Image 1 (cartoon, rainbow, N blue to C red):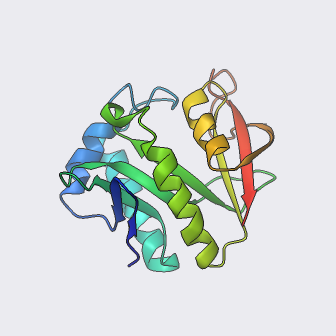
Image 2 (cartoon, rainbow, N blue to C red; image 1 turned 30 degrees about the horizontal axis):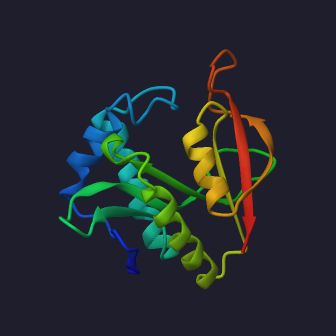
Length: 174
């Protein structure tokens, strides 16, 4: 499986020992503040299994991210099949989720730039990224990696009264 290196990180296949750290991260309200809720252990395990299935099926996915300096697992950055119906699906998103202790350090941007290069090598032609309209930190990452805002949409998996329902939508052609 492909490994991606940046100046500060290694993007790699997931290890079994990542799962408890991933579950802890998904329970952190700081990490999940732009999501409807934190994730239970069972929800995290289900997501982890979906990530593994995508790697088996496609040869790419959401890569586990570790710091080069000490090998610490800090989250994921990578490619993910969009799992809901919208006027831009089916499609592939580039996404990231990092432990709150590693926010605002340019790590998501650094890793996402390398994932874009990989996506192009893999023959992908267009990627999307989206987030709740309030999530300006993720939107800034989208802008920094060269994505263009193409609109907004109401996320179909969120309730009509959810303050997170309106999402920004970005895309990049590779």
